[in-house]
Image (cartoon, rainbow, N blue to C red):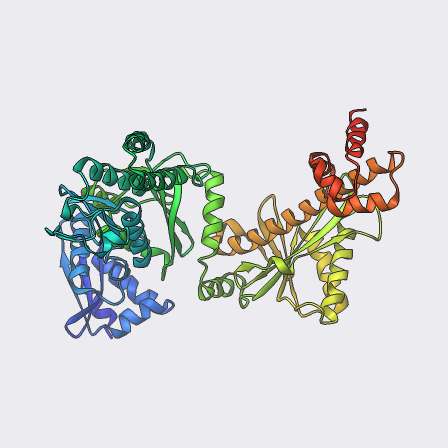
Length: 561
């Protein structure tokens, strides 16, 4: 283990330092002030696991002084790539992700490669090799690009030609113009820019039809359908940039979202050891991956990192992430919450073990009518929709959210007490201190082993029964959990409220139309959720149910007054 005295001998200058175990570096870092940074490592070792491992396992420390921090960053990256220290994030993410390469030779083909030093056009990255290989095979199947590399000279085509994966340019089975159009179509599929090539494909298919070359027509049809399906793909709402890498930081979670032609095409969520590892992660990611046209981030890039990125390629940096897009990102990040990271956050911020099961509650009404309650269930990071429950308030009419909440929680508590539902670790109530006190009272009355929190929407403050008030936006990991549950409880309650209003709206109308008996009403209620569905029903559907279509006209007349 290196001593504090040894670290204090470092100069107060910019440079790179190497913690070594014997002759092998186990951690390499850069610093504006070498002495201050090395002493900081020693201090942090008392409370951070990674820092403790670095300092305790190192037998020596060396440093290299540089003229400035920009030189230090470049030297740090080069040394990490040479030595691959076990505690550097860059070592883990600096190997490059798979890319699809369209070669630049006269008969182009596609390859799965890593790194950016290749002749041709690169597309990606892909976050798994298997996905990159699937895309490569799809390109061969759709566009028949050659599968041999290098291109041989044959008299007879190989098996890939007969399997429909290659057009056999090695045997002159395809003319250069047709092959060039196939390569251009492959680029369109990979880039998402399909409009420029569709017109050419349609024109080529028309010519092949005139020549009665139906096999070639079928191939072109499949290519057109694939590109048209891509052009109709799901757009990313609220995104101003068509091609971008979006890096989203949420606590120690960093999400990398690839936006191509306005669509979210891939994502990866990584849990950093600490938030300070973000810069090293980004260097690792772009060390062998191409930089996009636009880099979207929700944090500030250091001057040194921005300089390092611009040395590789010019790009546009933006922090314009709108609310719609941010909501989509948070929903995607939720799936990447590692249990151990969440457990650390609950322990650090709230001082409690991470709950495995949380029930969320909300009350909804329409001007005092159709008052309902909802119970949604979160289990180990996911919403369990099959466990959701909804309640219609039975004990009173009018506006009294506290009384309605007490009824819902009491009905839920009875089922929990009898073992009819799995006991949660925590109740989350949509509301403030008033709602919290109601929930605590119900919990105590039934002696349930459940913690109770409430979340006030206006300020996004989490209230605990111990009297803590936590501004959740300052703790994004917890906000992701509690905000998701609260919003889902609100959505589920509101949906039920609307459904009741529509259902009872249908009942109210049918009660006022002469000649509609109870049996007919029951039949309609069972098959139609609301007035809209009933009025839009086809006459044949109504006849099959034994309902005279004229009744639909009667309902429409009544509504028109």
